[in-house]
Image 1 (cartoon, rainbow, N blue to C red):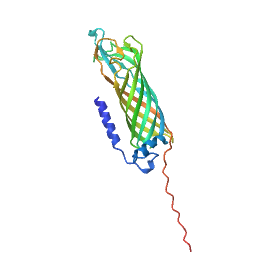
Image 2 (cartoon, rainbow, N blue to C red; image 1 turned 30 degrees about the vertical axis):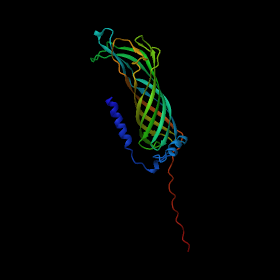
Image 3 (cartoon, rainbow, N blue to C red; image 1 turned 45 degrees about the horizontal axis):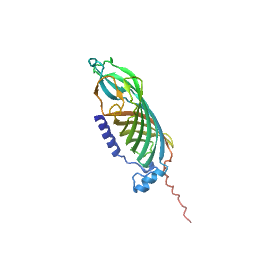
Image 4 (spheres, helix red, strand yellow; image 1 turned 180 degrees about the horizontal axis):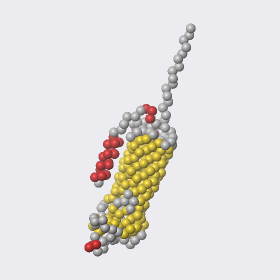
Length: 267
């Protein structure tokens, strides 16, 4: 948790310290809302929308720590391997450096039991006991450090997500009990957006989230390799993503001032 808190603090400080920009970088949205109804609500009906698709990989995490069937043998942990993620979504820029986005993400990771005796042994390893999949819907507030249509702009997001967990059993050591655990939790992301063309941009980002452990609770999956030692109530997840973004609006371009023309004096 200390790592998550540190990253949250860094993200918050970076978003508060907004740099000064020139008027040549302005687009169709305002820097600040002077009138909420006029500047924010009406922006939802303007040409400020975008659609995106993303993909990447998801890091593994530990769900349960158990003794082996013969407790003299030691202990092992049920954890997910590095998997992949795919998703798509839509967003809208309501102010010059602020927007919202909603997205759906699918992830898939293999489940393995790994020896956890602290001596580097792999004697209790059992690989590929199942496949853990998630379906996640998220809603986030985006904050850009530069205007959203700038050539390059770092950004951060804060939001909430709902996740459905699905277990494909490959071994009697893990069972789903016919349930689909659901969890709601916070998430935040940070990354960089690079504009490639008038309507196209690319993003590279890291997303961190947490939620209820699908292997704990009354309606949850079960691990049956031995007596349980530790069963955390929540698990964290880190996703690394690359995204392609299509913006439907057009950037507002500054118009150069007309060059004054010298007038001839009458004789």
